[in-house]
Image 1: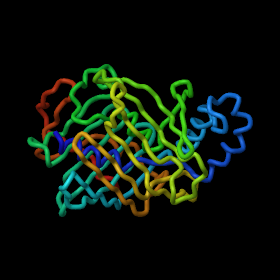
Image 2 (image 1 turned 120 degrees about the vertical axis):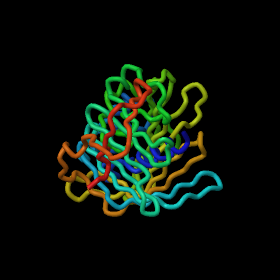
Image 3 (image 1 turned 180 degrees about the vertical axis):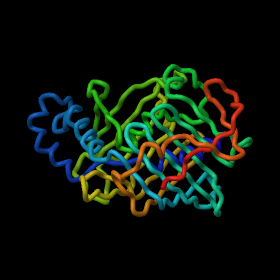
Length: 303
């Protein structure tokens, strides 16, 4: 189970994206008009911050990186570095593959209808999958990882964050935090928190520094994606990551990802995100909690 969560964590952390530092100034210019709507003097309103996040989402419709170095730390255990590839496309298209010492270890995907996961470290090495319909309707109640697919896309910077009424705001001298209360498909009350620098940053320093999932009852961190470095896409001005960290405290897991030559808005057909056959691998339906009779291939290697 820990290996499952760890491998999925590679997927999540590899695709977290921050926001464009150079456009933070528009919030400063807008602040005089927004102060009467903001509960915090001198801080942009929730509406302005959501507009800022959505602006970056409009500039990063797709993402691809074929050279990702993943360092995995689990307490005193330091695993071999993984080599990973990933691509994503709004609203739900996603592929991620990772290898260690030349052998495939993780293959993950998503499209408009379903999401799926395979790891060689799981015994038996099923390809786990679920439809979004089953997931939304609460029939997938035994996910071995805590992440909602919508949260994954948000940490990528490739989602719509509105309406503003869903969010509350607080701050200190250094950071601004946007918080949304949610309920997981397993019925657990949780909070999503987006943390931003209050002052203007310049790339490679990120303006948006963390995406947190917290247990609403205890306030404890369930998972988080910390953005360490970013770069600006020269074509549309969107922000893409170059270095980030995923934390999963329950299993004391931390993953540090370093990305070389990430691409924003690559030309990728949606057909690439379809689930396909994999020789010798059995699919497992997470809604029915039983394996299928067919053996399939996961299309998970990002081109």
